[in-house]
Figure 1 (cartoon, rainbow, N blue to C red):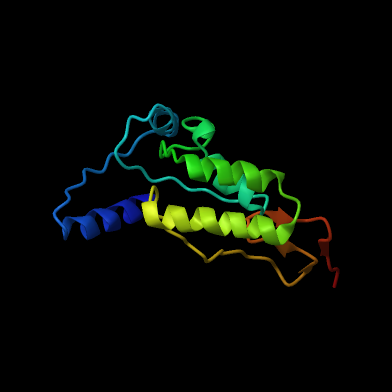
Figure 2 (cartoon, rainbow, N blue to C red; figure 1 turned 60 degrees about the horizontal axis):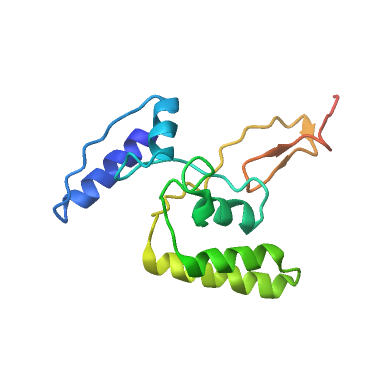
Length: 150
């Protein structure tokens, strides 16, 4: 699917005069190259497996995380850094949410990354299974799952 997404992006930006060359790299090469900043554009996936904005936003956009820690866009903004640090320390959920919304507004204005979201999860579970849970983080929970005997 990544190749089709890359081809779609390539077609879209060609309409405004940007010519992209798609390079398919082996996984470790892709990670090494994006960690070292040897790229103009790249396509990677990310899931927020904790469901908390700190997990995804801090790791991907704080300047302390440039490179291997997760900020492969090499994005740096002092105001975003400060908001993200303050949000990590904030215990009031409403205040914290407001801080993350402010960060999101800055990111929407500066566009260090364009998100491509695939919101459909294809999951097959037989009728003889009950209690299985699929979370939006793409993780499965078998904690309460059981097989129903006929």
